[in-house]
Length: 256
Image (cartoon, rainbow, N blue to C red; front, side, top):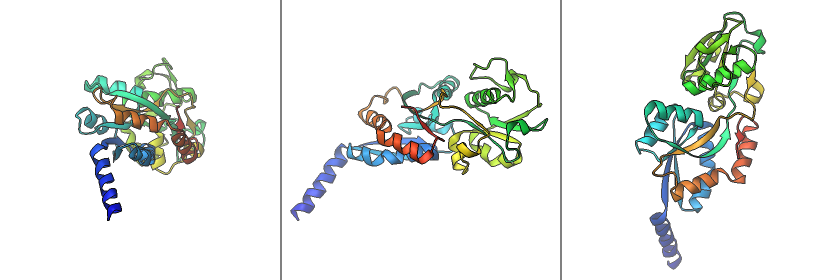
């Protein structure tokens, strides 16, 4: 009886001092990584709740509106553009990993096999759209006016020898149309959800030198909270680096 009371007291004490963090994340790999660190955070008095989203808008909106504490799904260029467009002031807490953007196709096995007038789908948000065009420029499919401009648009294509027809869609929906177009540029998280293997299936893919590091994002008022610092530290642990390396086998690359 005394042991039972001691256990109850310990649980009550933990509950009284535990802090809850609710973090938005896209399912793969972000939610998987967060769920991996849950047990460690629980030992440190932080209850981590992961809320999954399949779009790039609501995770930021809900953090800004204080309906969620943080999110984990985006890179800094996307966050900068979002803050500018929506007049929010979300901030990066720490960088965690890189998800190389890739070109995929069910119609051709090499990019130089794309026919004249081929339809290629790219993300419709400013940063990932520009990122997609930069990758196509690097792969020699097109030439941009300025291949250092991360916000390039289809209007900035200077040379298009194959007369590529670009379609712009929300990033999350692109895998669904892959079989209907000649090629598509897909973010790794959505490629993994669609059971694509970036290392084997991508016709071209960003290198590990990509500047698009995925970040943990919060608000200025909570970015330095004790619980947020513990989450950031957990995401930079050797265990997480090993988890990312072994589970995603190069499709996701640790950035620490």
